[in-house]
Length: 420
Image (cartoon, rainbow, N blue to C red):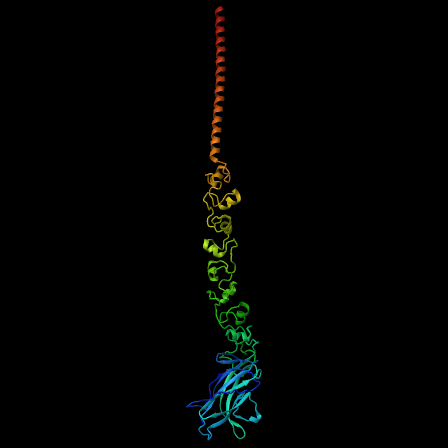
């Protein structure tokens, strides 16, 4: 009768009771003898990591052994065997001193295969990495001799434990699909609980190698420990953590600008209005203002005030081109920065300021004022001319009188000379 040792099977279990479930028999033209392969099922089946089966220690685990035999030397064409699950590679088996985790008796006909289920109850397998043996024995007079055996390499852990010390529970690691149990280049069968002596599995388990431990990704940042850029925005999870952005959302501040765009534009990906000017960052992008400068045109008015309240341009210091800056119009003269002639009198606000008239009062007509000034000047000039003429007349009269007196005096002198 031929024998076959099967390859490595990976499993982890917990044992309490041994149950053999009925299995349908199959027949083949060629059947090797013994345990052909083993599957792990049941609630204790956690995952397979790097080829090693992981089982929950607190759950029942079923080992399904696929067995067969070519019974050409049996007169009855049937043979009885024992299928056992053990922690030691026993070469022989005595049913009277049973120490197996699970054992089941099975009859095999010629060229027949059958599935035998060995159930292991919770907490029967020690915590940690284990090697179990699934063997088939042929009964003898005093003991049964082994036909063949298959090894099962497994790790038994509790769901609520944290084997790798990364802050993520074992059950959460299975849910996420992260590595937490086995380093195939380091762990060895027989290692018990806890962490590797060389610290390879101790802390800082980082499945996606992005610089954040799996535990921190899941519990602190809400990111995917299997992907370096959880939100797919082009910025890796650790870069977002350092920048203070949300690595699980591509638009941290919810302003409709994704984080990479804001970082590129130097605006804050964590604040909707970076410069706090009353204009949100996406509006500033559409308008063309600087989201990092609250007064883009430097006229003394915040961008938001100009855009929403004054209807003036936050991009131009003198929106209406009247010669007055927007801030001057609002705070000094009370004029409309978006209207070049606030009072509608036909004179631009800036011109009225130069003339000294009121740019907010349409009745204060600078043209009329100028006419009045001209009339006053003419009247003054006319008055001055009249005064001057009167003065000239008085002067002429005085001179004429003086001449008459002088002439009379000279005449009197001449007469006296004659009579003398």
